Length: 311
Length: 295
Image (tube, rainbow over all chains, first blue to last red; front, side):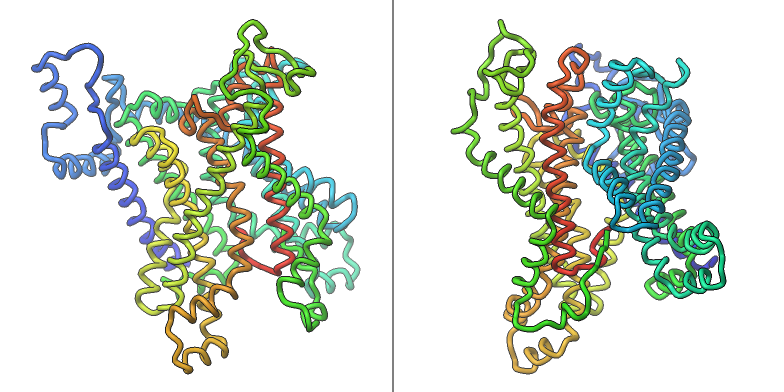
């Protein structure tokens, strides 16, 4: 197991390095310098600024210096807002986004696996069709459409829930979390249904039934573990989906999280801010993929040898 | 959903080709047939839009402003008095075009890359697929946003960027297919007969691998369309004066409190199309008996 984990860790390093390198040079070749603003900047000031942001150094030296900063956990400054750094931004936005993501994940796991299991118990009946059709709608309905529609229904027409904000009014965390989690819930429902159907036809389930176990024990104790495996493997990629979903959800509901900051930085062409956040978010995604792989290998020993022979 | 209900007996039946067989099975799947019909309808409308749209694309009626659906404007008008049906039809052209063209880019790159890796095998294959593994781990949503920011928001780049992301899975599927086929007797026979590799790939490998490719292509298109709409919603995709369903949804969301139809109709158009493509893809997967292509 340790060999598996260290092997996967070693694989992650070139990926993260590639992200840093590609992002760094992409941002540097981007047209338009950071100080090409409307008002003319005095040459001395410009030189001082360039020195501060190390733009006077050759490109390769800038790159190695940036790597050095990153190694110390410094993601760099902002071009647009002097005095603000990417670290501050992450410090302010990450807790919010993490909380939002956690609620969305909880919602998705609970609703998704429950409806998948319910559907799998009586396949090809109404008990199967209704949740699975809902799941299909959940997959086809993008967050940027579902969010406004939910706001329209529950916020504006029924006036049950606040339409925006985060932690200001009680209940304002509900709509964003559901919006972000529903697509994921739909995928989990489909995965857990397929997993359950496969497991329920196995011999050991028949044995469990034959020895007279009550149905809830057969499902809850014996079938569930095997059926939820594909769901766990899916959680790594799902994390990336949640993150990009948070771009939209945080924009719609005006939540001061990482996703909204990122989109704003993209709009303002705040290159260093984009560079820093891209590196940070990418590392996060790579890390979560790793965790989900390790988790899956822990639950299913066959995967370990499969990966070991590959690498 | 891998509802592989096809029994061995059915597979053992002789006398019908794979395609006839698949067509018969597809026709039994009402949802897939419905999806296909809706899709064909959408494509025809998109192609004919410049001639059949009820109003000109840039026709405004500022006095009218935003009005709910009426006899003159079936789906209402937006805040500039532009006919919503016309907007949705022109937006659909772009949305569908992005979906199909970007998928075609992914298809061409992925299939040739995968076929070469799978056919040549050995060290070349190992290096090529390791590269795919590394690219796979990259967070591409963030990269596309980065590309759109750095190089400006033009549509050609959007096609390329999305296509360049989606080819990875295609390459993996194609390589797996080719690798499995290579070891079959009829390919060995073709090799021993002295056929050149290009003929073997064209005559024997591609036709046999085409089922999974078709299925995955059908399922890639909605993903691509969603990606375009996502970017356009954030303001990083299609730019005015051009429009797309994603952009229309984003405008609609801004004014939904007063004019909800501006959000609902483009939303419906996008959702129905994505629905159809997904149902058709699922149906094709069952009909062609493809497994494990879902990621």
